[in-house]
Image (cartoon, rainbow, N blue to C red; front, side, top):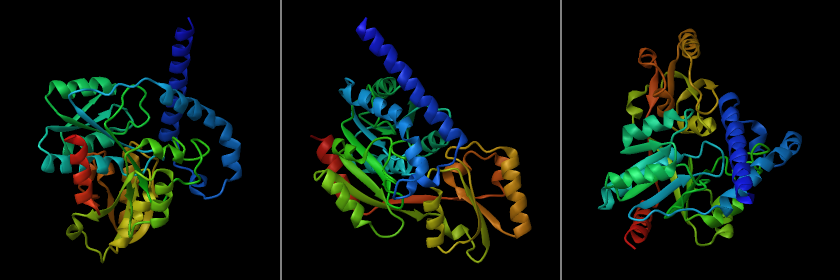
Length: 340
């Protein structure tokens, strides 16, 4: 009876956590106070709601997890909510493994109806699997004779353990105010870095050694890989023109900074909530504004795939490559683990 009560309680808690997370993502833009270095009044007032995250994390840490045999599993996740570059990093890891390691590899993502943009990108750029739970996805990958599976998201999974666990950060935001959701942007406290094998630290310019030193203090053995974005289709843009930019991503500020780095003349920046599903009137409004301001429109690849083809003709897509500064070290590390 006690076990049944615990199981029912666990399911209710998990459902509550998912519902809060889902509606927050769908209805709200990321609040500015999340990324203030000091606690704000609203952050303090919201602190009682962090109980859902604390209890959920407690269940995660106590859960018995399965590490599948006959397939090497990698998870690329985050502990900061959104905008850390998980999906581009997953795609990059797939390409590295595919070209450097002689094993059949596939990417995977648990199905969430509000994250179809990421699924579309993964399907487009990798061999991809999805499903309602990660254990079933792994079993499908094994049936398909894959030897390596790379999950986009899943560090907070209760049932699956992975051979390698990477966590992504954007150095611009780092951990924000460091507080748990919804008082702050954290899924877990930063001390959870002791559980992970590596960090991908996304930078717009130079690596942030202050953050690197902080990570090393928490986990001296963790591998740190600095990364940055390079615009692949820059020749398609006339940098003498004015641009309206729009996005529905977790960290639109980094997107804007990347464009500024390449000398784009940005006259308007329109931001939607992360994973937002564009309506026709949203796009028509942007196109109308561009006509009035005599500007071109550019958006992210993740957002472009959600726009109807009729509108795509009037909007330019920014294509980027993720560059890892110490890629040879990463390849060596992956080989040492996979071939062990």
